[in-house]
Amino acid sequence: MQKIPASELIINERGAIYHINLRPEELADTVILVGDPERVEKVSKHFDKVEHQLHHREFITHTGYIGNKRLTVMSTGIGPDNIDIALNELDAVANIDFTTQTIKPNVTALNIIRLGTSGALQADIPVDSLVVSTHGLGFDNLLNYYEYQIAESDKNLIKAFMEQTQMDTSMTVPYVFPSSESLLNKFNHRFFKGITVTAPGFYGPQGRELRLKSKSRQLIDKLTHFSHNGHRITNFEMESSAIFGLGKLLGHECISINVVVANRVIQQYSKDGNAAVERLIEKALEVIV
Image (cartoon, rainbow, N blue to C red; front, side, top):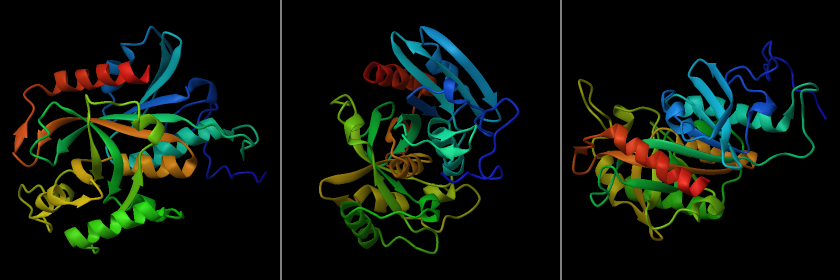
């Protein structure tokens, strides 16, 4: 096995990978990702036992148990650039020998579940409801920096999306990856399901205008009316496509569950976002555990 240079695989003084500050024994095979560092404790308070608590920059990690189920919950901060760090380093902790700095002969597939907040893009999806992503449709361009072969079904979805929306490719070249079928099947009628669009920002990239004008003023309308083979776009956020893409290429099972805190079509916002997030955590843990 070829040794990975120290400049590419950065290990800190306590033998943990640099950004997320984790060693292999501190990571469970089931990983819950949250954006907000303060949300880590909101998840781990449901643990019966916490084994490890780590903190470096925006990456806070708690690993412990609910019953016999070992779980890791980690914050990523906001955006696909942070997901690039989080997913690559989680995979490294699971699948690279830090002593020899070589890839392990037998790789581990992690179950990675994002719990986040999002804006609904359909009028019939009310605020405070829960949405499970069937696909992550990326406007963020992150996966365009990696080599991969696109599946025919995903190629057809992107083709239909570009034809229907006439997306400006000077801003983005969209990509799409499906969620894990095995994880998706665990979520039933209590959850809306659909395509989640991931943007590289909160304002202009999601069609919001404060003092600056967006280049895509009809974006919400275009996304709302897209349809392909029974699929529709349900929500907007900033992480899922990157998780699905990197996770798929690295051999992990990934899914994203979001609570709707805003409906962009009917322009409503949740009256109690904290309660909505707590409900998301409780309902998701019922399925995960």
